[in-house]
Amino acid sequence: MVVTNSQNIPYARQSVDEEDIKAVLAVLRSDWLTQGPTIGAFETACAEYCGVPYATAFSNATSALHVACRALGLGTGDWLWTSPNTFVASSNCALYCGARVDFVDIDPNTYNMCPKALAEKCEKAKKENKLPKILIPVHFAGQSCDMKAIKKIADEYDIRVIEDASHAIGGRYCEKPVGSCQYSDLTIFSFHPVKIITTAEGGMIVTPSKEIKQKCDLFRSHGITRDPNLMEQPSEGEWYYEQIDLGYNYRITELQAALGISQLSRVNEFVAKRHQLAKYYDEALSNLPVITPKRLQGYSALHLYPIQVKLSTKHNRKTIFSALRSENIAVNVHYIPVHLQPYYQRMGFKRGDFPQAEAYYEQAISLPLFYDLTFEQQDFVVDTLRQSLAQR
Ligand SMILES: *Cc1c(COP(=O)(O)O)cnc(C)c1O
Image (cartoon, rainbow, N blue to C red; front, side, top):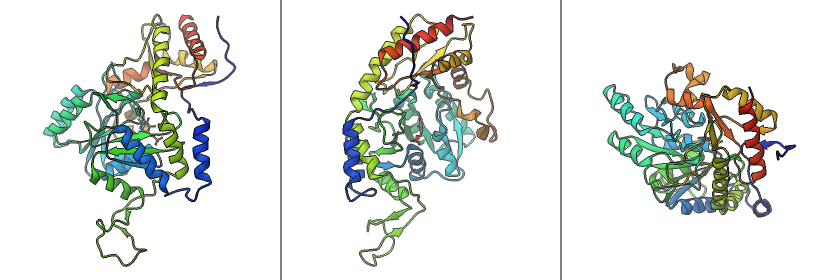
């Protein structure tokens, strides 16, 4: 029997419970709304969860990416490489620093940065003296990149590595949590409501490096320090602080940090449920002409469930997407390759530059996947998809 759908089914949605609400209300009644003790507690909880000593919370992952680039010294004349199959923030951070951007094409099985393409591009760039200072692999849909292979190449060419794990908190790679920075300098998480856990807006940098942690704290708040060890002049009194670099106001609030601590306590449960839902889709979609996302690397956090509509069917992605949307299933597409955005095309990128990311994009649809999604809603999604694929 086909379930009829009166409600909108989004592609992603936060899960906020009474405990979350209580945690936020407690902070609202406290002395500190920002720059208080809860932010530090959230950072400690995140660092402990990832098994690293340091974490700095940010207003969002975009500001965290910008500061990460500053902390690693990215500037004018430098290059940064990332995946074309990502949100624009992963590459915009380089442009904020006056650096230049290029991309490394994806592996058609994982939709993540392809180590082989990276090795080839590095070899060529070395000859042209255009090697990047920073590489940002993106753990697309929550599945870790092949970090072992990527880090090996990065080390060979002396490139720093930032993991954009905006999709991937709660995931695992090589027996360790994503964020352990086993194969990177630092890792970034996003806590936007569509992601695995939320603080409304919010982001985090986790790192094993004390030096990076100090720079993160500095750039998050105007380049100002109260740490006598970092000051350039003797203190003039207890009020004294120094601006020693040009930073920003990229702070998160105490309210958001409280929500973050509460949400983080459920991250394993969130991801386990996503695996149940993904498995249900895998089976329900197995005899439809679509390619389901493969989980080939570690334990995915399963932020997204992107299917590929096979080109051999008589339908194109657009008609199937519209059929789902017209049934109030708010499917989405992740991602329009960044290099095809008009702003990037104006820098000289063009169609054909990254053929794997482009081919993937042409057929991609992200089906709804979030903690409170029900099997009945999944049945409705699959039935609607089946009908749209059967139509002529
Ligand atoms: C969501 C996202 C970001 C940006 O996160 P915000 O917290 O919204 O700034 C960056 N990179 C990727 C891959 C994302 O999905």
